[in-house]
Length: 177
Image 1: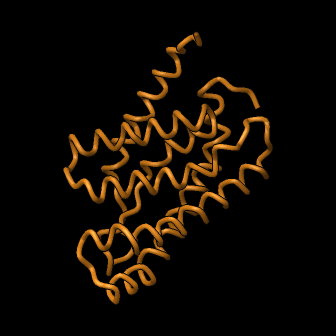
Image 2: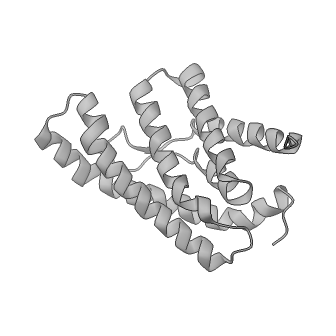
């Protein structure tokens, strides 16, 4: 049986807590869409995916989901959509190895940004906006004018932040470059 690493549990708990507290820091980008807010709560999960394992990144996202549903607001549709779309950002990062160079990391983050943007547009158009009762015309307008630009901006900001914090986070989790 594989030995359970207590350090990994502690790092997961700390990063999940940081992720939860970052949900309270919201920046509204589009004044015509106040429901779209940029927050950096996915950043600890991205860093954990890059430095530890993808499973820890998904675990941090799941713990953030549970914490936000419990303590912040009980809106299961928006929380579930945030969880699924955050997982869509992390999914392309799972093939990244710590031994790879910054160019590989940069390309993976661009791939993750594109994957997140496409997933955000499709999920919101076909699944989440119909749950709120929007009709076809309004959904198309919201997706083109709000969701697409917001997804591009958010994914690029998260990718840039992850690229900057990656080297520093390696030292924290005790991996050498």
